[in-house]
Length: 338
Image (cartoon, rainbow, N blue to C red):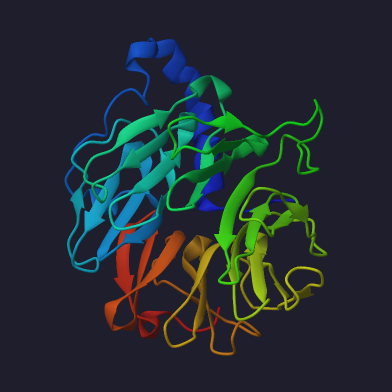
């Protein structure tokens, strides 16, 4: 099957194809994750894969260790002052306006204590050859989870000072009951305290203890999921390859497919302040629901640039990040049904 992968999955493939070149051309002291991110004009227009709010500040991460900050709702951006990584950063999570973590290729984990201005490296394992794709912290930043390619999972109980691998139960499968060659893509926290994890090949998981243990909740679908979006109560959407959307209204026990007109891979989603549900994805796909996620209109950006993540900003606008960098739009600017 000719699958269209998520933006992050495509970056994984690019990263691995480049790894042998890097290893042969440079010694360990010059490895990308040891170097610092390069200062560049228009850094906010380069590849960005995740965006997070830290207080009033927006922080986005992406290619070549790029971390950009905005204090005016995305109108202007500047690069972080110090980032000890030049590999692709894939995800970022903040527990308050000052403390946050970013993860990426070479299994790098970075921490900031000043709202993203400066970062220190807490973990780095290029020998694993397994990029990290997600990071989540709880307990006021004490307990953290990082996960990614080939079922790689790390756990910290001391604010990221030390990390322990939690991925393998035997040589064939992980302790999540999935083959080790599968990727773990995203963890989402619901308001009722339940966590959901999306993964490859129809794998989906639910945690009732904030990530300590996981139970499989497989929807009737064998394609990859790249994200989950908790709705009201026990309702959750999971989405991924070729516009696939599945909905549960009982916390993950029973699932229903939500038909829509898009065939684009879906990467992330959000609920806007007015209740509008938005999913974003490859080829500029922006799916909009005014029915609480019961049905969707398939719209798109005019230039069809792939979108990795989105967040609502002031004035009911959306800030998108992806292959075009950071961009602010209104829903009214989108092209009609596709």
